[in-house]
Image (cartoon, rainbow, N blue to C red; front, side, top):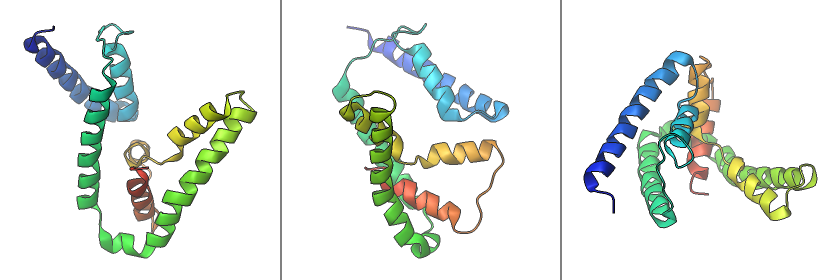
Length: 164
């Protein structure tokens, strides 16, 4: 059993590294999420960190708790006055749009890339929903602003399809 001091030290170092990476991503114009993936791969069992983690239940529990906080914060930050006019379009994009995107990517992956149908559909399900944090990070890094109803539509659609 690894002593709790080591676990706290490693966790603290990863948090400090993540803070530094977040600041570095702003300077480089690279999405923060991409650099977080690099840090995770370097810290993992195949990277230089050598951290071995195979507890799927703990990972699922932490992910669910994090999703609760993310959705709660997103709900608090949502301007309902802006979201009300685009509710119908956002709901269609968040449900029907995600479904058809998952099917289209699944068919593409299985028919053209040679994946099995189940693997293709899994790939489609993974990439079909829009992640607002990633989209807005890329737009912010490229100094692109969304005008009119597009920004609240994207926020509403990505926030409402997160649970899917």
